[in-house]
Length: 434
Image 1 (cartoon, rainbow, N blue to C red):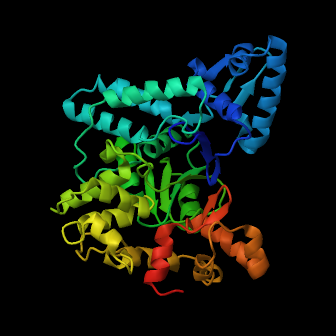
Image 2 (cartoon, rainbow, N blue to C red; image 1 turned 90 degrees about the vertical axis):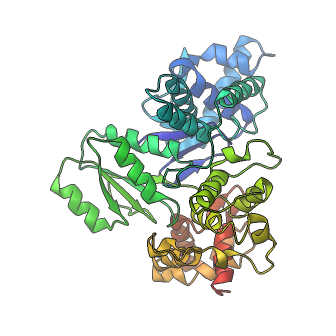
Image 3 (cartoon, helix red, strand yellow; image 1 turned 60 degrees about the vertical axis):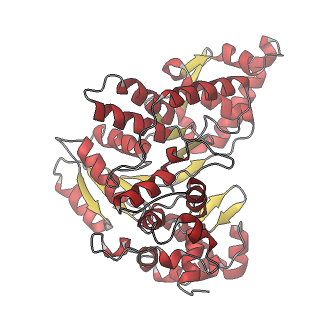
């Protein structure tokens, strides 16, 4: 299974449920970034060593580079297979890593060759979705700053599409769609494995699956929504010849499962003023409001609202549908919270998608009974909290519940421990669980 390497935003690697975003030094992160941007994903060792330590002579730079590479391998752990090094070259295994900047560049270049204006528009739109965050945010090396400016200039040269479009179109998931299509198209033995898109309900899994099916025509995968382990085993055992693509709220934990976890949509960064509509979370709100025939004024208020919602798609979608009655600024000013207002009673969606509360109750109902009782207890902990605090307070059952809630996306890992996402806390208050 390929490792996802994200260069837009904070540099990070992800595979299945695991993410690495903390590196021992800036140079460790720079090694990954420079290899990812190099031609053929490899460079001369000596050349890179001297670039990273220009004040040293070659022998000292070689020693420092060897030590830095060793530190990087230790941090990568099971990801370390993506690094390939010999006495002359160091690089990334192009067959084992999928880089978001590569997708961005391919979309920008292919847009000029698009067969019609609509296709050109869509490719530009997807390119902008990928590049909404700065290249290698936080790295201050001259090379990183130059790359950041080059890619930002390229993104700014792309005509910003009208953000108000059909809400049935997938917003902010281009990288995941392309990665899943790549996984399915390159399966060597159909029946040995399957792709499982995992996220809480309301993250757009069904729309994502439909887009993957559309792109892989005329040989689309078989899809299963909210699969059980038995259903997946039965399908794989039949040997139909079609790849299997599933969408559920947690991993099944069976052999052959290739997990693609969806995360919240990017939200505007602190201090971002221009082009707020380029952020997928803001655009989703605008799309939703327009489709419902609602005005959507006040971009600063919308930006603040999607940040408060931490990029969770369903509450953003529902807030947009109620923009005429409850503009974003008004929602944020409500002293008792606004999550109870995030509802759409029209029978055009599955019931669990008609309100934020129904979606969260549906998620909660799928928690194993042993873990469900810990849901309100964790919500009372001050974030960030540690696993040792959970263990001291509730012993092994608490730690097991923590692991389950990580699977469900009810708890997030941070650099300092764990935290409860703001929408989860809003539901706990709304439902009177504390």
